[in-house]
Image (tube, rainbow, N blue to C red; front, side):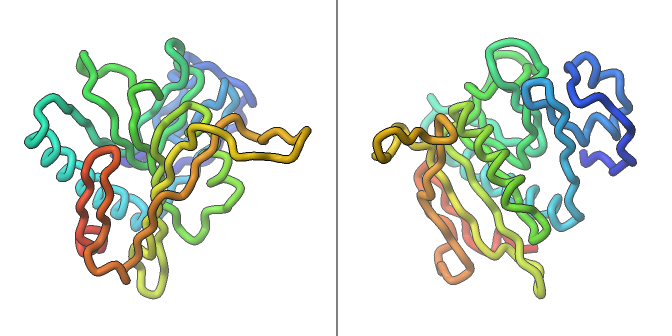
Length: 217
């Protein structure tokens, strides 16, 4: 369920999960905690929610097909669900627009980054590159294997492109004395647009065959 936007109150820059739980739901739902630091998350327009749900539905259909063919595999798909970093504690988390994770042992169990195979964001023209790259770096640092982006267009509104990024397993060669800004990074592994007649065809984290018409409203 989408949480309605509410005016931002004057809050400390650093909070714990326990602090967050004391806030009204409409306020807490706009916040992520990055190692305890308060990060406000802008809620997108209705189109953002609509396209998020459509893509999650496509991921879920493909997951069910894969589980039917390979009973030893068990996938769950969701939207706007907290992903907690580390093995314990809840004061360091992000909330991707959509995600794929392994089936957990217990109901209502917290989702840890180690459980997640794919995270993604639906990007509208108002999203800034700085915000996108900062969140992508968080996902990469947590070791999540796949990051996807759905890029929305305007006039007409549509899915303009879909990009898949794979977590690189080793750094590229850099000049002597130069170290990477982030310990892990994503490399573009696939891109699809309406010009691709067969839509999305990709094998990770499970076979994904998504006709383009499934992504438009």
